[in-house]
Image (cartoon, rainbow, N blue to C red):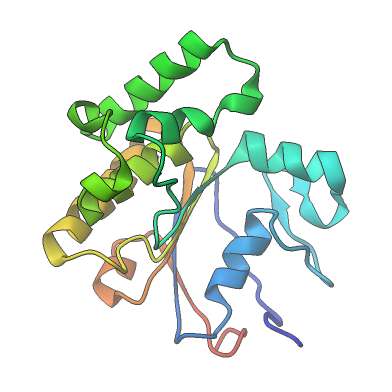
Length: 203
């Protein structure tokens, strides 16, 4: 089954790309390919000089760990961990001492305005708060590429605006490339570039 076909797009380092299209058009698959979660069967996918089609096993895992941060629509937080522990967990493979991991997680939560909720578990947080924790977790590895799949899909208007402003602020402050999948045309209009997919193809 072909999900993406003939998609040709280039995003400069530090750029901001919005991806739109109806459900099933291949938007999430595109993010999965960029993030190294799915391998392209044909064509070339290059991120920061890395040819993702040529990476396998440990090399692909190292790419994901060192280069990519993921933000999902359904947050992807572990309910039995606190906000601090969820963020800290993302950096457990970096070889940092536990105390430094906790300090780093606390710094990231403070950066997204969640310092006072660090000890709360996800079910004690609102949707907008959970997404801010998820963004902090995505930043734990200092990613050069931040991929957000419908990050406002489960949020009310006010929370959605806060999350988008936060993602844009992170991009500006850290210089990372931001790729956002969204159904929101107003949100897409804020990006530097806009890719609209139709059945896995460019219209």
